[in-house]
Structure formats: C-alpha cells, structure tokens
Length: 149
Image 1 (cartoon, one colour):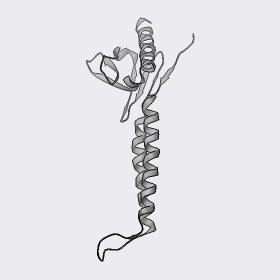
Image 2: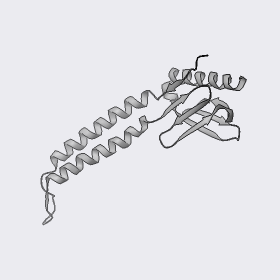
Image 3: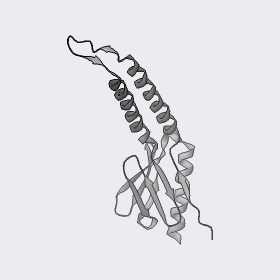
Image 4: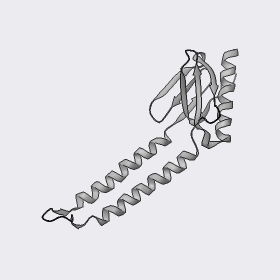
C-alpha cells in the first residue's frame, strides 16, 4: 500500500512578495544613504551612521512582514490534512472534514467541517488558477479515499 502525500504552496504570491520585499530593502537602503548632514530643522541635530543603519533595519523588517505572505502551505495524506496559513494553522483528521470547497469568486479553497465551521486554505489561491484546481482535486481525492475506507 502506497501512502500518497501532497504538498501545495501558493505560486504567484511568492513571486510578487519576493520582488516587493527586495524592492523595499533596496528603497530603504537608498533612503538611508540620503540621511546625512542636518535634520533640516534649526538647532535640531545631525543624522548619524546609526540613523542610516536603523533605516536599513526598518526596510528589512518590513520586507520580512511582506514575506510572511509566502508562509501558507497545505500537506495532506490519507489520514489528515495540515494547513499553515499566513497567521495560524490547523492539523485536522479527514474524519472531521465534510467537504473540500473552492467556490466561484472565492479567493482560496476551504474545508467545510462537520460542525458547520469553515477553514481557509490560503495555499490554494484563485490567482494560481490551474495549480489551485489541481490541488483541490488532489485534496478531494484524499478526502474521498479516507471517507470510503
């Protein structure tokens, strides 16, 4: 008996977030080089090396915040599904899942649970089109196999 495990991560958002994060770091680094001399107010002080370093550090922190959108992932096998979203995650056995849904005009796939709750799967986003549809089909097949077993 072969145990199939599937893993999906968002595709397009990773490219967008990576490029945007790199752009933010470059922008804040360029701005830091402009921080020299007087602060522009009378008797107020001078920009120093620490101010430049802080500006670069701020750019890096903002870039890390942007890269958090690359975090979503879903891993599923015959027994359970593990979902990691931008904030938080879920480890659920297939027995609590009623259906895997990907409604029209929905930004991402969702699990419908037996207690009428819904769990979003940010790793399967509508922007990824065929990749997301393939992922939903794979999750539905695993869910169906676990229900019929």
